[in-house]
Image (cartoon, rainbow, N blue to C red; front, side, top):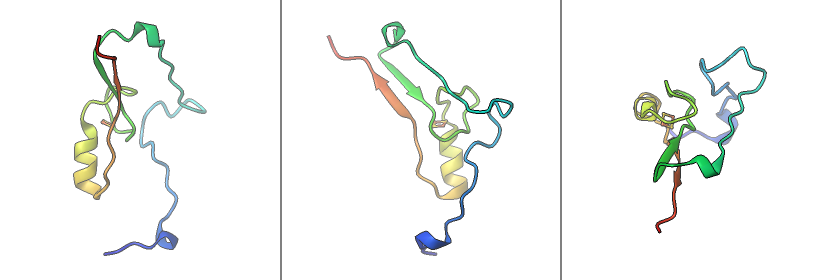
Length: 77
Ligand code: FES
């Protein structure tokens, strides 16, 4: 059914990644990005977090969500 914004409940989005850390932060040295394309997870379900491993597909199917990765692309030379 249609969900109004008032019925949306706040929930933790991170089910299991590095729960012993107060805040999960990752940093990337941009000059070391060698690959033409790198996908970073935004669904918090990846087995290779912070990289995307495609787990968002299963999550979206199970929940009706529409999340996907952040793609970092190297400029074409
Ligand atoms: Fe999380 Fe792809 S696995 S965005």
